[in-house]
Structure formats: C-alpha cells, structure tokens
Amino acid sequence: ATAGEGGAWGMAVLASYLVSGKGRSLETFLADDVFAAVASTTIVPSDADVAGYRTYLERYEAGLAAERAAVAVLR
Image (cartoon, rainbow, N blue to C red; front, side):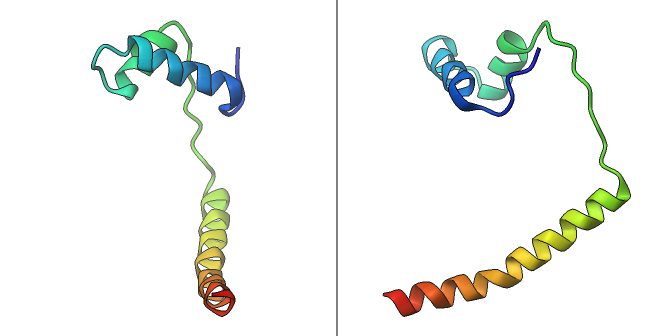
C-alpha cells in the first residue's frame, strides 16, 4: 500500500519514467501511470504543527550564517 520515502522504489519509478514517460511531465506520468488506481488522502497540518515548523525554519535559517562563517574559516 505504501513505499515509504523514495529509496529503491523511487529510483525504479524514475527509471520507468525515463523509459516510458513519452514526453509527459513527471507529474502527469505519476498521476496517470503510477498512482492512477491508488486512493489518496490529503492531510492538513494542525495550526500547532505549522507554527512549530515555522519556528524550526526560522532557527535553521538563523544558523546558516554560522555555517557560512565555518566554511569561510576552513577555506
């Protein structure tokens, strides 16, 4: 029912797309060939999840300056 996240299954899907994509976009290939018969569900995140992710991104972005400084020192 599920294949998790990418890995060997994802590589096989991309290989199949390269061989039989027939000029279609990857999005169309996935919708028409890979997931055509699969029921899907959209899950909307809670407000708390959105806020938590926003906080994570803000902290991550704030840390990028430290990463840049570290790279500059190592050069």
